[in-house]
Length: 233
Image (tube, rainbow, N blue to C red; front, side):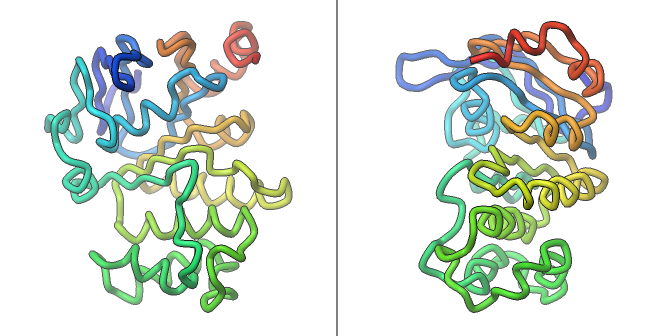
């Protein structure tokens, strides 16, 4: 675990109804930089993200943000405290234009400079401001979702499968933008695209059946002989 942590999760248990998904999970995220959460489908990655943002309650364990316990804090307060979340699905309002989607994201940050910064990060969005979000390509929708989350000026950005359904030619562009973001804020990325995740991340956790099976510096995890075993279907 990184020594200086902004998000500190200790011995987390949680799940859905009576079905436990995460077991004794301990994760630390530094003040800035990327952290990858890897694992095969069903390993508990999305469950971890939903618990951090507050969509799922922690059954056991502690979640602290900047030294403050947020384990029982509502999602809205976690967002105000500096957590942004881009879920795997349904991350944009399909019938609204790109401009209106950004307006929704900027309700708490009405400065034109903030919107301009998002458009500078993702210039493709500037070309499609009046286009309905539902007609964008998969990659453009992901860019819009990330851009909208950035308008909340998060200190920690949670990204669940940011390149799912994205054309290979756009993955590189999204990767470069995330690398730049991770120089400024903390970023947790859940991603099946291993190369992307480990390029964005300085540190990585690998979940297997709801437990942390492997962790370490991103380069060490990439080179671990155990990695393939934990990621294999």
